[in-house]
Image (tube, rainbow, N blue to C red; front, side):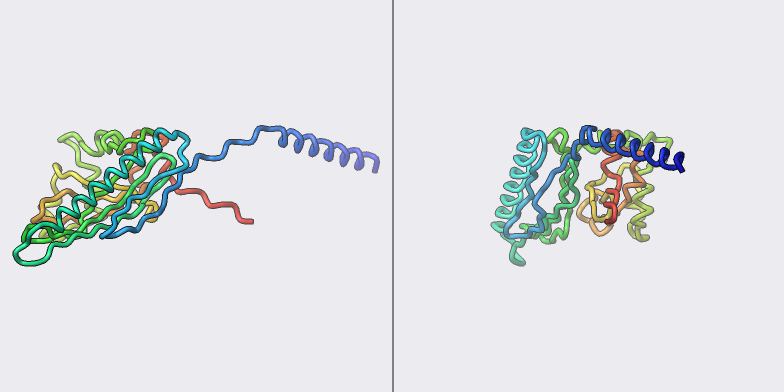
Length: 243
């Protein structure tokens, strides 16, 4: 019995010491956070989101300035379009702006524009996305984000990017030759809701019907991202512990 009480006292003492040691450890810094106003804005008023909460206020101001510049340019394009003369109908212009991805490192905005401006045929739902590197304040250079071989593979190797695109957006028979081209370039943006890299081929107007948007899961492209911090950024956020 004496030995039992001695062991109990020892365990109590060790537990108290552990709690004291834990309480004296410096608290870990909270993860960086960045916020932006969600935007689902459509013509006639085009509004791009603005970011806040960045540790570097100079970068924050730089990003917001570029967003404001893009907003002014898009509004000017709309005004020019609506002044255009079309012999067979009234000009039209609409733009849908959606905040698609936001993290402490990256911001993607999905922009879709439909317009009929002084030409005999309309352009419908054309993506003009923009992605910013929030660590530099500049628009993201995808050629620096991805490995060389992902975007520009050697001539003797198949294009992983093109293969991924064709797997997720198989073309129709009519579009097969148009899309299955090693020299094809793409527009990219990130989408957190789909956990995917959004990919759309850049095609001429006559081939726009073949420019299907593909959602390639982040897990399938992470090995092709140069910076380990960017690879980590695209990992799913772990669930909060249940209470």
